[in-house]
Length: 289
Length: 177
Image (tube, rainbow over all chains, first blue to last red; front, top):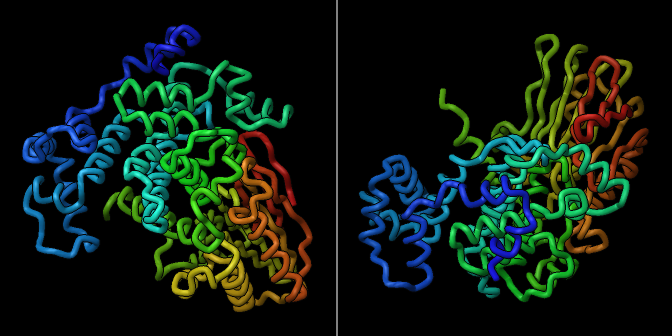
């Protein structure tokens, strides 16, 4: 049974409606995902779809023509997609979509920007990890999963009025993690709701699984994608993005560093690379003079 | 947000300025109405320095323990690391008349992820804290107060007028060092 189907009966009706009514992903995202799954999709057709969103095309061309891609300038969406790759384009489409959805998440002590920036920082961290550990063959969809891993917080904050102080007090009193406190107080946690959203949006199973288990210390899933999302969440918090009321009180598999072959030097490198990316994002967000 | 060129915020010239220090930055103020603030301290450490005679306060928010992790970054943005950052904090403070023997130093931060406690490869908070203590101790600086460890996020404010360090965790929890 699917995650969404299995939890529907246990959730308040408002919350189920919150998940199912969430604005669907743009058609471009689904076409890009189909392409990544190896289905018969045409890059030309996808580029034509992209062309209908001028803001997105402008961002795409900016990225394709940045110093990172040293070549003659991309002149249109098709050339830009070929330059930066379909995964990067998918991430950009999803980022834009998330931006349009995200609001404050007071249940977690996060404002709109904190919540968005946390996902964006985690995405950068996942990318940095893949760069540092290419032999692990971590799927590039880890970046997407990292971006989306806390989407459940958005839904819970929208539809349930839970006070962050109450959850914090429970976690402190019972010496449990924030997610455990969520489960004790409201019956489920943001990872379950996040997985239901991912499923509603028809994300690949491994992305949904990573969102579902990113705080699962005892996970038995042998998934480098899940490991990458767990680590990306840690790194995003370490660079100060989305600490919120939860802070660092969350679960992570104790053997993650072994599975990802990380020593402290490599970990620090990932942290520094992520911080650089977060700065770049922040400077892009600042209004120009 | 600091760039490679402005890793250090300028000392305040006006009255009552709220100087916000980001990760890998520091600020030193000799203006009594200034408050130096840093947000989102998780595993990072804020080193808060105050000289009661000249009433100069300084705050460093560093990310990682050692400059050797990335020498290029340490050159461009020394406040990223404990060793290069603490040295720069004191050097900057000395130019404002601070004397080491009079310094009151407090440490804040160094939290650790619950699920990673005891996992040496990823214990950034503990490494940061040990490094800061070691550097200060080796240089004969006594740490007079700490709000460190645990898993909580912290926001710190240092008042240049009296050197009080206010630590906020969550909306309601406030402690003074």
